[in-house]
Length: 135
Image 1 (cartoon, rainbow, N blue to C red):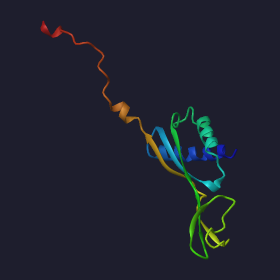
Image 2: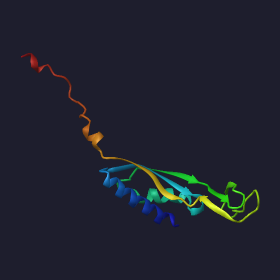
Image 3: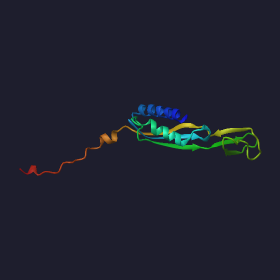
Image 4: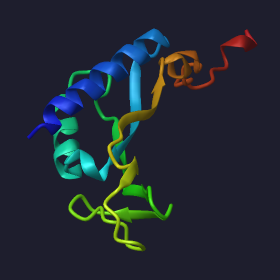
């Protein structure tokens, strides 16, 4: 299960970026994962849930954008999506292809806050009005 190590790296990079930006809490991490990376979404989510408690990402959401494998034929120029086992050009049958996408494994964005919104909000007035000013 290499997803645990991948998720640890994603979290470490996210913590560094959030800390550098002055954030205290991460609320969402969006990643792109190519089909050819051999990662399993379930395992990424499981690792994320296992690694985030008691961290600045506790309660955060992991959003996974799957990127299909796509190649361009170097003979006829056709661009096409394929799986990891069948990369032959569907138009001319050539095996001379250039992989365009499908090996991505990157952090697209991190949403975080610094807690200032909660700290800046005035405290809720819980006291009842009194008539002591009529003396």
